[in-house]
Image 1 (cartoon, rainbow, N blue to C red):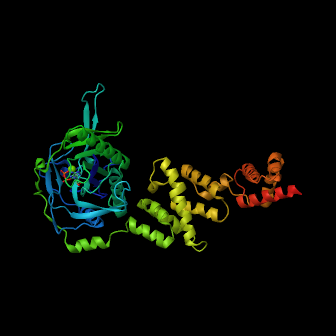
Image 2 (image 1 turned 60 degrees about the vertical axis):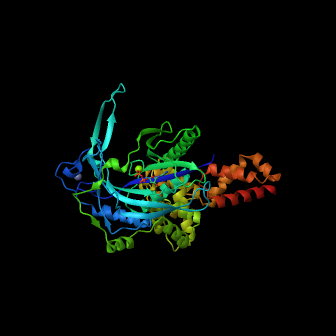
Image 3 (image 1 turned 90 degrees about the horizontal axis):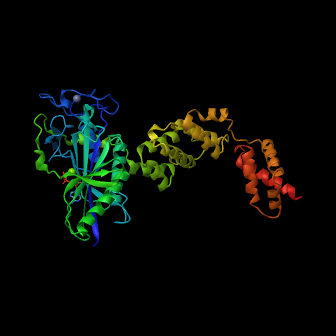
Length: 496
Ligand code: ADP
Ligand code: MG
Ligand code: ZN
């Protein structure tokens, strides 16, 4: 039988606010010493009272607006009760029936293997809650229980949850949805959204059903994936596992499963909990929240440019191809880097279009290549936009050939330093002096009689070999066009 995959994603995004969700503690839990960002509120001490973080509410509304959601005028917070050692109060303040944003959508490119063309994925809700403390488990050496440590710094850090409708039809669509949402929150500036650090995490709900059926199958929820690739792989695995269960005559059990990266499998963690398990009730220590149209309008007006608009602007203003614009706007950090580098170039010297294309190539080509090797984001690039711009200046004034510039970029990347200094210290400048190149050409011709003979007998490719020799003799520094014409000249002279 043919099956259709149904996926809905719940994405938790830590909001990049200065203070925590309901207290004045700093939210910089990742860099602070353990348990140094605590107070009676986030420790869950009796009698402590929460206060709503205005910025976190604004960030959530902004995200809702960017997702085309409706922002209800009236929302509230609720207590979600469950006992767990990382949950200091024994309940989490969350939002249950009246979230901050409802009924939006996110457009994705689409998976050619399922439905052709772009797809609009429904977003059910965006709500605001708080993160829990961080546990670290240390089993004893013999596989026994050992001990655990808890760091309360993360307790109470603002957490936004974006819940999709079950509209996704393949792991690839799920991956695209995540990548797009990830880029969106970074463009909005509401989260650093670093998946490795757990700032952006996803629970994936997945079920399968006979193709053509209009009722949903029983779903499982998969957790613990900390990269886009892991989400994709976990979903592929889970779809296949469910298909086998059904084809073997079994039934899929609604449960929570964990992705085990090392083994590339999902394993059962616990049976599914239901809303009534949580004994939700309105948080009595917080007032209901009235957002109101004026506040919403203010936030809407202040929304920054998002990836699709920026991509269109890059095409229109800089004459970049759709492909180039897409590459550059894939992350806000890269788009920012590109525009900053471009703004440092002297626009009076060359047509903007050419300069933009050149900068684009270096940013998402050579520089990204170096960054990827170290798994570094462009936002922490050791080569700053101004330095890259200086390097490109050395190409346009003839000091460096493109290939020498690549060598200089590598040096800038690994050891730092200004490009002009590197060129001077390492003697890398391009040789444009005719006499100097002529002597290299003479040397190449004198020591390669066979190549010369080949040329004279009509083998044109010998030119390229001799050109390579000239480059070797000049350590790659001969100005290529000049060297080429001098090689040809010298060979022609051999004919007579
Ligand atoms: P819960 O809060 O119990 O996890 P929700 O109804 O809020 O349940 O759904 C959570 C997520 O599961 C949503 O993203 C939704 O789209 C998705 N979902 C619901 N039913 C299915 C299903 N049958 N198959 C796949 N995903 C589903
Ligand atoms: Mg769920
Ligand atoms: Zn606190």
